[in-house]
Image (cartoon, rainbow over all chains, first blue to last red; front, side, top):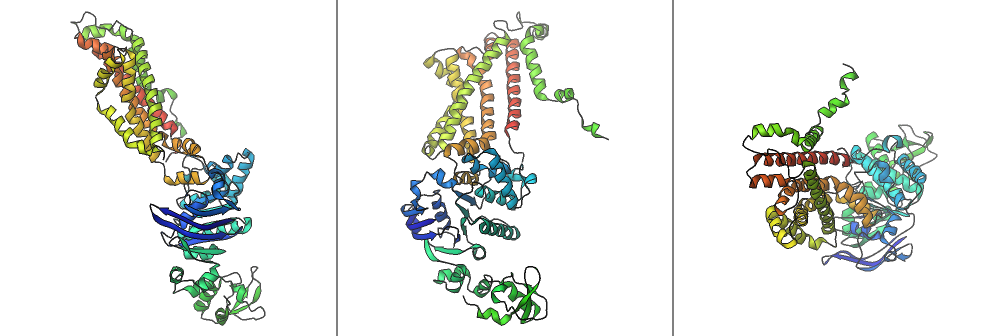
Length: 310
Length: 254
């Protein structure tokens, strides 16, 4: 859906993006991660032409993005940022309706879309529709920010550290919402973050940027099991790579369906990271597993965690 | 101790409103100055004509208001346009030039501006309008620039990133958000112009300054008082009206 071909960009002679080549596939949740100054935000802003690239080509649905009118390009790409940027003089409804209004949607269609998005993002429409941004908490404001980015039913969603300023509980809740929205809509999402846990939680594909070029790109499992260089290894954290790797699998991946053991059960949907924690906390080597309806589904053994194929 | 306690009759609310009082006082003085002749005769017994008669105060007030309205309208159009221009990427280079030029206009005393304008443009309303319009520019340019710069960068980035055109960002986001600060500049400018328009009488423009100038040159203190009190009331009424207008344009109550 988006292809960077040997793209470079310099600010005052200093290269921010240096010969960047990258493909973002349709329907994929891509997380771009890197240290400060790695060029991750710049790369994102080039996609919707808030920054223009100096050289190379950036293609959107096969066409060089410079052949699009910037406004039209941006209306096809939702945009959510860390500082949210809600318009303080507009109500929640008016804020969300920004892009539908630009696209001249009929009033009733816009209204239905606002209602739908408020429900999706767990803001009861009757209660929040007519509020102003300053009457919302930070987490609620970012929910509105995400709803506004999605409102015009864009081809893709660009998110620049959207949850970076939120407290951990609110951040986890919103990560969960965006993952759900991605699963339900199949939208292409590009999210920039410096939080490796956020990247591992959300990404189909992680792109690690270092000084303006790709240090490594791959699935979370690939990145964790085979870091391409020291920068990537440092970035994902050397000391707890194993724990992070376990976080990418669920109990169902290690299930012994026919075994029956006693003890307090763990859900098959829990991550192996949670399972490890439960093994240690309960001082056991085996425990029973239940499915999502709390029916016995088998058992899991501590030793199985070592036999995972990465 | 019921809800009745909180109900205030409309007349009481009006009676507590300084704007209502100021307007009432202004109307009484503008239309009824002749009725106050005995008062001025008693206060200034040495004067043969204790109330200004060359022109009616109604006509002087209207002329004064016309001067202020025309010059302020010109200041607003020029000042807001300049303020918008020098905050755009294309006009940013002109910002120091515009700001120092406008500040210079403000530094020169209004009498001097009038004195220079009169021989260049002639006597009468024209030099007065030019001088007033120039003199009122600074607060408006400053207010416009300050208002536009107070807008959170995130709102501008989001608006652009969502696909608004520059024009739309300006008219739908920037100007509404900057409006309270722009209005504060317009208010300062207009109040300055109400006072400065009195000085315009020195170059032959008819205004509420006329009785003051005539009084000063003819040692008639009563004329000076009459002109000065009405100008003062006019400034208060306009200032309080801006209060209401500003409150009405504040879209979000913080």
